[in-house]
Amino acid sequence: MAALLSLSRWRNLFSRTGSGSEPDETHYVYKASLAGPAHRFELLDEGLAWSMIGRSGVWPYDTIMAVVLSYRPNAMQPRRFRADLQNTSGKWIKLYSTSWQTSALMMRQDHAYRAFIGELHRRLGPVAALTGGVSRPAYVAGLCIVVLVLAVLVALAVRGLVIGQYAGVLFLIGFGALFTWKVGGFFRRNRPRIYTADRLPDELLP
Image (cartoon, rainbow, N blue to C red; front, side, top):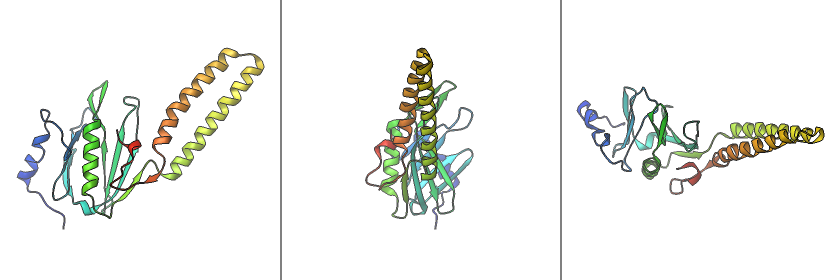
């Protein structure tokens, strides 16, 4: 049976994770948006306790059936990671390694995120399916799009050389190199894989 927490315990559950406290491996807090409240998590003996957007609950560790780690950069923070947790009821929880601070600042929480994810894996039961990266169909489709874009750039560069547009060719070479570097890092980190709780994939952790 899932463990139930009393209302009074919920009011004090995350008191140690306020703005003035140091994070530890059993607590994690981040803001998914500027307007919304912080998402708070704690690893209890009963399971994973969570509180977000006016909702809260506890997932016993043996009911967490899947964990997906991935690398999810965005325009505000190129070094951002995500953990997706699914329980036996089919519900999902997302944790990000970054937290919104201001409209122009998304702060990295590398140490706190990595420590919390590591401790969570040490407490998970053997039923959890541990996977990394994006799904295989999405990965293959993305690679095909990248190859197509690079092929178009090469064709345009060759045509530019033929007609003597050397400045345009240099621009295409620079753009292609930047595109390959940015997109290559995403696909290198997010290749589909299965991992074990005692060997977390470093490419998918800050």
